[in-house]
Each structure stands twice: as C-alpha cells, then as structure tokens.
Length: 468
Image 1 (tube, helix red, strand yellow):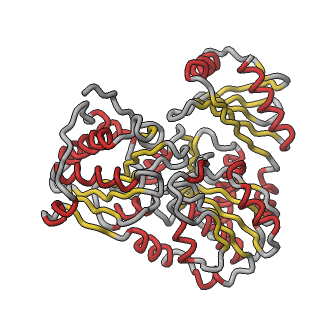
Image 2 (spheres, one colour; image 1 turned 90 degrees about the horizontal axis):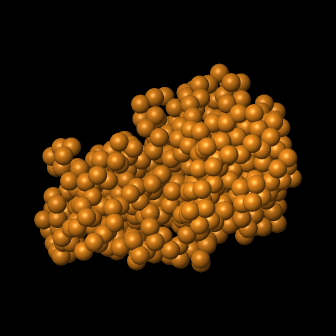
C-alpha cells in the first residue's frame, strides 16, 4: 500500500474525509503517537475525544484501538466534546497527551486530528514534529473491540462535559449571571459547545444547538458572514444585548453587540485585556499572533504591559503561556486564552468572561468597546479569503516575499514585516497582510483601516493588484 507522508499544519492534521482522512491514516498517526509516548516514559495515558463532525466517533474509536494495541492507556470521552474539554481533561486527569478528532472551523468535508499536551493546551511545535516524524507509511490495524481493551484495563470511559461544566462553576457566578439585565443569545454553529450554555445559562436564546454532523453545509467558523441568523436575532430582540458564537470544536469565539454589530477577535482581545487589567487588577504579558491589530500594542503601552508577537498558530502562544506569566494570548481567528484558565483557546470561557464584565459593570458591550476606543482609537478590520489554485496562491506569496509589490492601488506602505506571511504597514496608519492557508486552497487577505468603507476599499485594491 502506497500512502503519502502525513503533515501537521498550523493546528493539527486536517484532510478531506474518505479522500485522505481515512480510518487507515488515522491509525498511522495514532501509531506514531504511541511510539513517541513510549519514547518519553513508561505507562503513558491519553485522553481521546471527538466533536460533532461527521465520522468523529469512528475516528476516535480507531485512535483508541490503535493506542491500546500499542500499550497506551486510553481515557475515551463518551459523546461529542469540545477541544477545551479535552485539554482540561488532560490536565485534571494527569494524562500525558490528548487527542481530539476535529477539523475545527474547516468545511464539513474535512476532519482532523489535534494533539494536546500534558499542560492542558496544544502540544508544542517540537513535540508535534517528533510525532510527525514517527508516523509510519504502513501499519497493521488492530482488530480487537473496545470492550476487549476495556476488559484488559487499557480503556476507560470518562465524562468530560460534566467535568468541564463543574469546572466553569468554580470560575463564574452563574447565579449572578442568570440575573443579568443583559440577555444572551448563543449560536453553537451545530458544534461541540451546544450543551454547555444550555446547562449553565438556561435563560439564553439558543441557535443551532442541535446535532448536525454536516453543519447544514456551512463551515462552522464564527465570522460575520456565517452568523446572519444570530445577528438578526440579537438586532431584533430588544432584551438581548450580547450574541456569542463558537466554532465547531468551541475553541474560537465570535460576538455581537446589542445592535447586532459583529465584534471581531481584535476587539475581543482588547476587551479582555481592558477587563482583566483595569477592572480585575491583573497583570502579565500579552502574547498575540502576527495577524492581530497593532492597537493591542497601544493598549498594552497604556497599561504598562509587555507584548510578544508570535507566528500564527496557537501552539506558539500556548508554549509561552506554559512558561511565563501571560494575561491574554490571542489570534485574529478568534482563538483566545486568558490568565486563570488553561493555556488553551476557549470560546465559551472567553464569552462568559465578557458576559461577566457586562453584568458586574452594568454596561453594554458597545459601551465597553467605546472605553477601549477612547484609548486606542476607532478602527475597522476585515478579512477576505480568496479561493485560488495552489499554484497561483503560491506564486502570489512568492512575489510578495520577493518584494514584487510596491503599492496596492492607491494605498502605499512604509514598512514590511514577515514573521508569518507578509504584512504591509500602510501610509494611512492601517495595514495589509497576505498569508496562504496551510490546510485549504485559500489566500487570506487581511486589512485594517480607519472606517469600514476604507477597509473594504483596501481589500478591493489588494485583490485587483494581486490578481492582475
């Protein structure tokens, strides 16, 4: 059998179901993981679970069987779980590793395989590379049943949803939140967070909180274009003052204010820094991915906080959080972690923190955003994902890397950064960034301007320039 080498991307291995993401290939990855775990020490244990995506249970059970067959103890989650539930479970159960079968926000045709470290967050880039290097080209698939491994003591079932819910009750005052003057609407995007808000905030308005493994054909990514029903619900229901959305595995966040206006991840990161530092008197470094707005630096300068910028991929942020005192770590894509929680993205936790902020201060999300803008100024961010042939995508990135662009339409730039992708700092104070997706045939074009009209115009000029 001839098979391709499996490569992990920014956040795990992802591929199209039945084409490359197959039972056999999941077995190969799990064999590589087992060999790596045994190289690290005796009697390893792994927490394994899957989200709501098609085939999740089958692939999680395949993972469990291969690990058990190679002498690894498996703690297998019953039912679907979120990625933060796996990370929390690894930490609380003192396991050596976590595996979550998920393709996160990718289209429904994809599934994926994420690795979580013993610290309760993404495995380090070094560990991921070591596992990847041990993935065999061919593997013998185990034939024993799960009940066989359970009888042997190598498989144990666990309830991670209950563990996660009870943990959140120690972090937030849900009696107070249930009496909040600001009603919440929550859109799970048919993802793995759907039961949590139902259990903790029974008064919330729930959207897409039922099981649909194909997500009704929509990629479960919490962007404004994918959340029109949530936006409409918030905008047309006077008592609803916050709309929360999470992605397929509930580690990313999207928000709406009471008027139904989208609050993007840049603003969420700013709000969390503002809340934790000014109102809760917490300190620590702020760590952001390369694609996050420079307004974060301005806010941190205001509060005297150190800032570090990383390559894109939460594993880089998490690694810093494990070793240093970090207040907030965040990505443009909506993956954000905060001090006092695990070093992991968690859309539900972040949403509850901001709901707590609103409730305790008696202020709307819009009012809290204005507090931040008073410090950093107003700005508008947009992103355009261009579906392009991989050859064209790579040619554009190469041209950019070689200095082939001197301006984008009417927009000139004065500085370029290349930490991860190519970022152009514009003469008008905004910025443009070009970065190729590692998992899909997409070229991501990021832009920030001083108004929505200007930002959309920047994106249009970039598109015309790079495709001409």
